Amino acid sequence: MLLIFLKLFLMQLAVAAVVVFVLKKMLDHQLVEIAVKKFEACKLGAEDQKLNGIIVLATAPLKPSVQERLSQSAEKKFNRQMQLFVKKDKTLRGGIVIKLNSIVIDYSVTGRLREGRILRSEINHGN
Image (cartoon, rainbow, N blue to C red; front, side):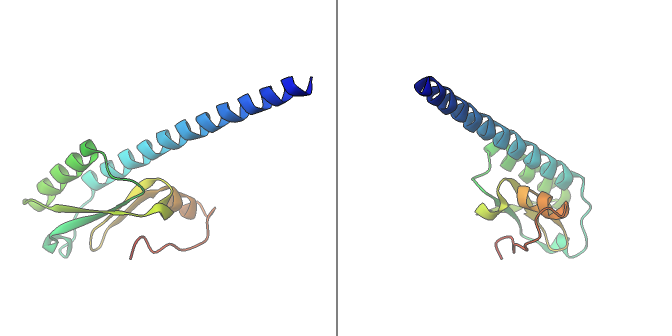
């Protein structure tokens, strides 16, 4: 009886781990999509027009499709090619942060938790 209980417990633990992994991937994907849409819709300030590149903080390398969307949107906004500087920042826990001079689009897990006042610690976003 104990052996059956232990097997069931381990199976439930494995299923829970898979569910958490899938939910984390889904959340990460959604946060990245929202951040890209916000970037596409944002209005640039005068100091932003002088930029040569855009800093993107992420927990993992960006998918090529996301990089392409950001590059195309930046080219439309700036009327020239813009370089994306993708920096790895594990403290974000998922999602991305897009930085210009006057604009910070923070759709990271850490940023969402901090905005919801669930997380109180300050993170410097790779600075």
